[in-house]
Image 1 (cartoon, rainbow, N blue to C red):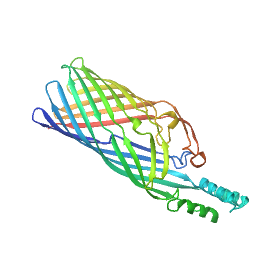
Image 2: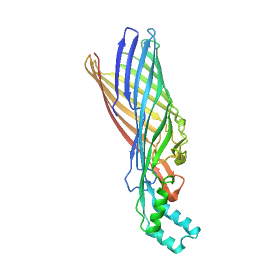
Image 3: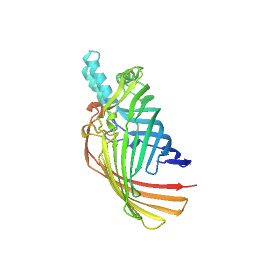
Image 4: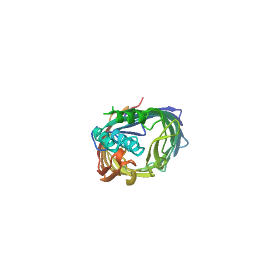
Length: 355
């Protein structure tokens, strides 16, 4: 994920800056034939944040800053649809209504085993937020920083498209056609999702013991409780799907150090513990998140006074956690029951040029 930042001093006390980054995102792709395909296949959410800001150095010890965030969000979620279950439900209703003999109904269900289609939800929106920060230099060797980024409230509008299979007989074809008709549960059309991305706040500390060695620490809080559910609705207000999330607020704790090997090379290392907002009971295949422990190393190389290059590597260890989800309907969505585990490697590089 790329990011870019520009800072321009304005006199001795002010500076203007602009940042472009991706504060939130998700991409998770499963094999087409996996058991949870009726709950999630391709899951992608992208945000792009434009952040102009101003900073003011009040005196030798205190600096403050503030900025405006303009964010763009694009989302695409896909899953298979179990049309065999749709046909079986339709047959059951016809049999109960006396419109279809039970023997014929059983034959229709048997003939339409393993019938599946595809649902795709796409949408986008833009919204505004803000961020503020302050830096307190307690001494020549110790400083504390605080930053806060506001929530961003989206109304993501887009479409849901269903790709239905052909029925294998007149009865199943009629049931699929009825389920796909305008206004029916599996009809394509416009949809929307209200999504409130969370507030975040971070408190950081740096203390330099000497010219070579410094210790850094931070504590970050994220208000993930702003996402109680994922509700996809039609324009009429009728829900297409409602996924309970019940996420909770999280904390992240980090500790690191830097060591100046010489005038050109600085070494870095650190650890962090990052809580997941996802409770065990609402963990879904779309976001099977867990607590993570970070181990990271890095280095800075300064080949000239104007040019800096940073390199980093992090490995994230995670717990093995349960995944027990049927999306409220095991017959239609299948039961995904088992354990989930992730190992993550992150490689990063940064170039800074001063002019």
